[in-house]
Amino acid sequence: MAQVQVRIPEELLEKIDEWIREGKYKSRSEAIRHILMLYEEKEKTKEFYRMLVEKSREAKKNTEDLIPLDEI
Image 1 (cartoon, rainbow, N blue to C red):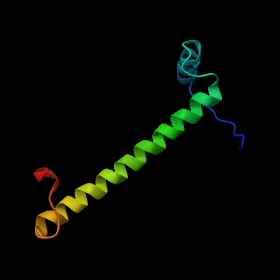
Image 2 (cartoon, helix red, strand yellow; image 1 turned 180 degrees about the vertical axis):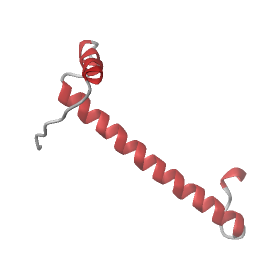
Image 3 (cartoon, rainbow, N blue to C red; image 1 turned 45 degrees about the horizontal axis):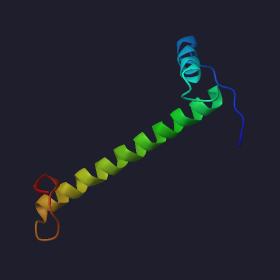
Image 4 (cartoon, rainbow, N blue to C red; image 1 turned 90 degrees about the vertical axis):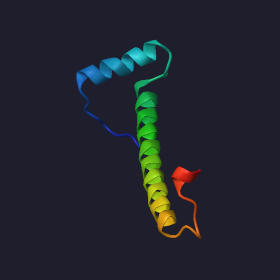
């Protein structure tokens, strides 16, 4: 694993420390890694959704090949 230095607003650091006190995370590093992982998953989900919307548009044009999402 690589080590990086990050500057974040004090309010966010306090929130991370609160999560650690609550037992949600063991350390600041763990919390930040998890937050980044969640962001990456969100971006992948958005891309998947865009692909589904595009396929649904195609299905409406080519009804013999595909089923539109709103018909499922």
